[in-house]
Amino acid sequence: MNWLLVIVGGMVGAPLRYLTDRTVQSRHDTVFPWGTFTVNVVGCLVLGTLTGAATAGAAGSHLQLLLGTGLCGALTTYSTFSYETFRLAEDGARFYAAVNVVASLVAGLGAVFVGVAVAEALWG
Image (cartoon, rainbow, N blue to C red; front, side, top):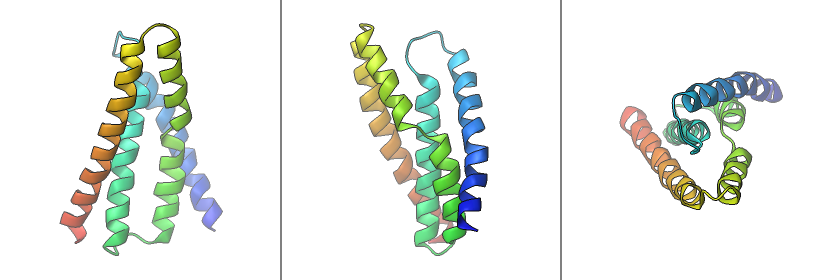
């Protein structure tokens, strides 16, 4: 049963990642990878909220598998972030590459903290 939850979450997360990335990126005329940045920060927010809910006893292991491992595992992407950062640097956009690394780290960790705080406020 656990593997089925991961598969179902992934089946939602993967197309959601693709559609979100394309939609966000199409609205920005820049080399900065806003689509990947967006899905990664949203994934961090979801995982932070899920972690806070689990800590408070409001989310069980099945929900963690479905949303955390399945949905967020397919939604977020460290490999694409790494590749896009590499491509920015290789193409001479080193400033954007550095901004991508720093902003992704700061925004991702910030989103986790916000998610945990929201979950604690709701279920703590």
